Every structure is written in C-alpha cells, then in structure tokens.
Image (cartoon, rainbow, N blue to C red; front, side, top):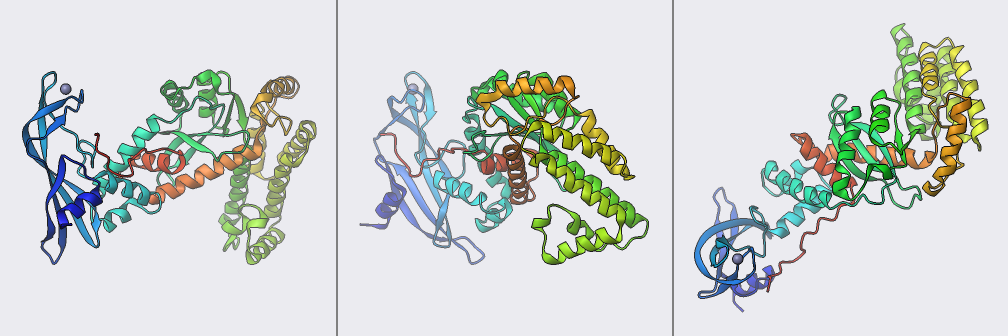
Length: 446
Ligand SMILES: [Zn+2]
C-alpha cells in the first residue's frame, strides 16, 4: 500500500475523494509540516449541496484545513474542491466530508479542541496547538451555540437565578440554572446574560419558546434578596414561587460579620489572618485557623457576638418544621436588633423587609407537592409578613454553589477571554450538559 492510500484510509476518505500527494515539507525556522493533498477523481459526478442530485463538475477551488498533528508536525489537508452545476441550483460548491463549511479546520481537529478546552484554558490550548486563540474561540462559539440552541427546556420547573462575577470583583452577569427537585441531576446551566437587572430575567423568559418551554411552567425561582431579581421574577415568571435561599441569607450574614471585623481593624485591632479564619463553617477550617478564630472571638467581644449571631442564624434551617423555624428566626431578629452591631441590625431589617411569603420548610420535597406548598406559603404570608422560602434548601444551595464554582473555573479556563460571548460559550460548555454532535469520523455521504 502506498503512502497516499494509507493517509486516505486514516482520514476515512471514500471515492471519489482520494489523496494524490503527501509528505513532510520544511515550514521554515526548523519546523516541518505534513501536507496531504486531496482531489476528486477525474470524470466523477458529485451531489449538489442543496438537492443532493448528482451533477457534473463545473470548476475547482483550492482550499486548506488544519488537521490533527502527525506526530509533532502540524498537518494540513488541501483539496481541489469542485463546484457542480446543478440544473436547479446553478453553480454550487460541494461539501467536503472532513470539515464544515467556512472552517479552516477539520472536524477531527475541532473535536479535539473542544475536548481540550474543557480541561485547560483556551490560551493554553492555543499555545499547545500553535494556533491563534481567536481562531479557537471561533470553534468553541460555533459548536456551543449550535448545541445550546438544541438544549431542551420543556421539563424545567424550578430555576435558580443568580449573579456571578465575570471579571475579578467588578463585572457581573446573570445566570439561570435548572434545579432538579429529585436531586438526581446536577444543576444545569440554561442561560447567561450580562448585567443583573429585572430585565435579565425577562431575557431568559424571552429565550424559553425557542427551547420548547413556556414561562408558566416555572413553579419556583430561587433568588437572592436583590430588588432586581424579585421584580424580574414577579414580572416575567408569574407562576413561580420566590424562594430566598439559605445560601444567600448566609452570604449576607457572612458580609455582616466581615464588616464587624473591618471596623475593629479600622480601630487598630490586630487582625492578621482573620479574614480566612472567620469565613465559613468551622468544619472547613484547619486546626490553626480554628484556634485563631477562637482567639479572635475571645479577644474581641464584638467579634464573638457577631460570630454567635451568624452561627445562630444558620440554625434556622436545622429546625424540622416551619413553625419552629419561624420562631427561631423571629428570636434571631430581635437579638440582632439588640446586638449593638450595626451590620447585624441592618441584616435583621433586610430579612424582615423580605418576609415575603414563605417559610416552607422540609414540608415539600417535590414540585408535585407545590400546591400544598403554595397553600402553606399563603397561610404564612397572612399571619407573619413572611420571609423565608426555603423549600428545596439543600437543593438550591448546592445548585447555586456548584454553578458558581463551575463559572469561576470557566472564568479561569477562559483566561483572556476577550469578550462576554467567549466566556458564555465556555460556561455553557462546562455546565450546560450540551451534546455537540461532532461526527467522530469522516463519513462520506454515499
Ligand atoms: Zn441542486
């Protein structure tokens, strides 16, 4: 078997395509590349790309594609791609089995790039493949956009809407995540849009029909306590019960604690390492951090009080029933108001002004029980101004936390991502459970 036939077989080429020349060529600067030249057999007829009718060849155009490396050498396919003259569609360029139209890469190369960008930053893939990253970004955006268009939302009933930082500290985007009440599937990223306003929710809702979904099917929306998302959900998702998640409430408590620390530091207190020692649950700390936490809380009474308040607030979600949780929360608020800690007084007010419906607590575990849940929420609303929609607390907390961490990972993958569309593509690819449908081997439309 000669070398050309061997490359033809390796590429999965079928008649009338065949390899006519191949070899290593000097690419300058001591680099070599493999070239594989492909032609269509003389006298062949080819299908019109529109109607698939076999037509005589009209003329040719030479095109070139980057393919997977052959050992360490970049490989380029080049082909004289025929145009056919179709009786119905005039002169059309035939499609080639190894690449999609308008791409300078083969399908195999693109599939490889898509696999790599899940595992490493696009800039690193670009370096590895000796390609400019803007060309790779085009591949990523193409496949992700197509796969995302096909994403089916018809069974979505519960969503979490959250904001996430897209640049360190500053820029924010809104993400919409599907929550599975059965907890069988990990959270799925459905939608991402710049900004975090009421209109962001509207943009998600506007995208629903194209994914086979209707706004009315969303029964539950877990959001933070921002006015923007509350307004957005009320306006655009009329059937969704708003849930303020434990995750967000505790995030606010963490911020309040941090403000107490900053104030002490401002007044001259020694706070080395305090930021990390005070953050999060004790179970996540190292022994040294735990000791530092105890020491700080013992030395600074205000910090000790703030820590106790934060930990006590957490217990709200440990109560088995709504009534006892409600009692606990009421007690917490009056403690916070009397605590002489301004940030916690403010937090108590925030929680009170958001009692908007909901102290639903482990009573409902599935969406199918939403009716009961709604009735309960109504009752609570009428006799206690209401906060705390806390229905699938573990579910939403886990969903929000996992998506946040995926997005932060994606942000690192997308390092130097240049624009929001690129970041979005990587996020969808990593967290959207997309099916790219790239052919794994070249098949010729026989
Ligand atoms: Zn035709």
